[in-house]
Amino acid sequence: MRLNRTRYNFHASDSFRNGQYGAEQWLPTVPSEIGKTLSLQLVNVSGQESGEIHSIYEVVSEFPVKLNGQWTCRSPLRNGDVLDFGLIRFCFGRIEADHEISGVSDRVVKSSLPILIEGETGTGKTTLAKEIHDRSEVVGKFVHLNLSAFSPALIESELFGHMKGAFTGAQRDKTGALISAHGGTLFLDEIDSLSKELQTKLLLFLDNGIVRPVGGNVERKVETRLIFASGTNLSSRVKMQDVRADFYHRLCSGIKVNLPSLREDKDKIAEVINSFAQKYQRAICRSLVNS
Image (cartoon, rainbow, N blue to C red; front, side):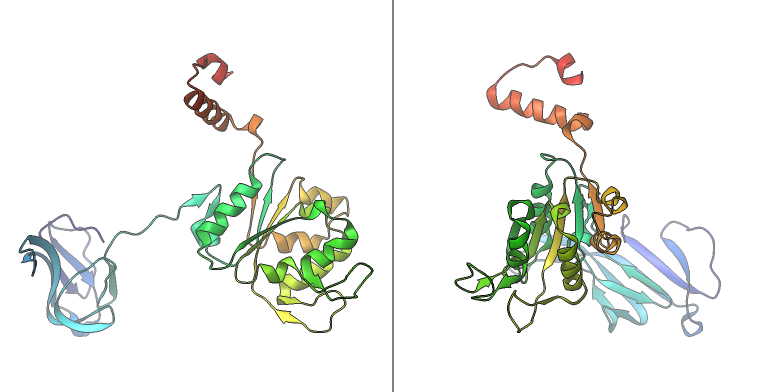
């Protein structure tokens, strides 16, 4: 609630009156409070140590009201306080805007929902994934795994890990990326290169959070936030039957972000050119920037 006056009076009424008259406002409330008044008034207080005078709002009521769940008749108001007056609830303080990172709201960023990022090479998929991780306030680390960098036979081991002797060349136990990112974020780049068989196994993990290493019998429950990236349009890959439809819809269950290429983003082009000009102290023709 934003206050611009030195005093507000709220009158409990059995019927809502349209309009507000200066600092006088009428609010519908329960029958037992009809006719009673609550005031929000500005008062001056001095600091105990500095002696400086500060102005604060305080609530003054002729009957007990709930402030942050506690009954009171008089109390100073602080940022974030919640006051219940009959059927009305007042929230005091600044409400933070729901900021976005390239179309991803703070609510999604700070949730555990999976995120799918689509865009051509160089559009900033990895940068966006790292920014989401940093803003998510998770305590774990950020693990980046580019699936196209491994042969199909090794991807399962990279994801889930393996036990010693599970296959030729497995000379020791290996911790997979899903467990390494426990409590943090796993960024799976080039998810479009994943085989259908591994799509099924990863889909099971998305459903139950259970990891079982290749060649192992012991299962482990992990909590890992997953961000996926694809250089191609996955919905078209579903139509081509390269990607399972249920796997695709599970990846998009949080949000899907499409990053435009640089040639499609004139504002980004201008930003890059201006940054270059400032860094190297070069004058670049404006018509070139706008062309």
